Length: 182
Image (cartoon, rainbow, N blue to C red; front, side):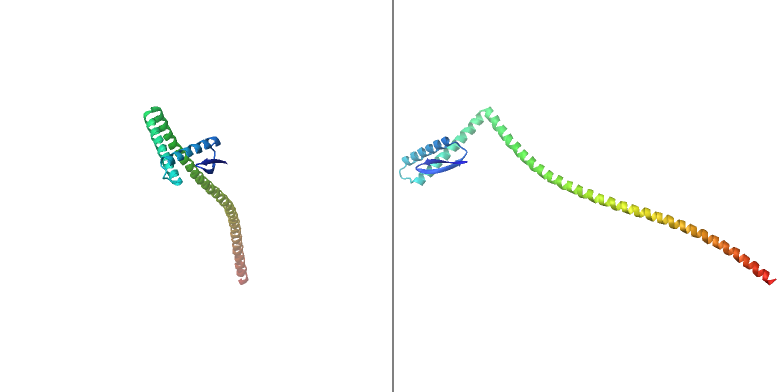
């Protein structure tokens, strides 16, 4: 934006904006003319009072123009349709803005849920690893249990054999004791 110098009622101003320079200077000349007309119609006004009264007159013209536009719109069905379309467009723009906000909220929720999912997947992976370790330990314990059962069986068989040997030895001792008495 560039500053455009204009003169209004003998005062210089720099106006920043995107309006073209020619248009701004024409508006400044028109405003100066209106201020001078207001001052000429009442010589008792000082410069500030003249500026304020001119501003009030311009605001009155603006309000009258708005009322005329409203009246024209009310009488012309095409303009009424345009007004209704503009109103509907404003509502739709509001809905679009709300939808964008909702989308942001849903996106945040999605990101949060995605993070939760990733955390749960990492936890599941860790638990799967722990499960594999526990299953290996279980299998090792089962194998140890089978080995112990096998050893117990072997020991029971050995005990049985030793008992049989003991019984045989007792019979021999008994026989030997009986032949010594004779």
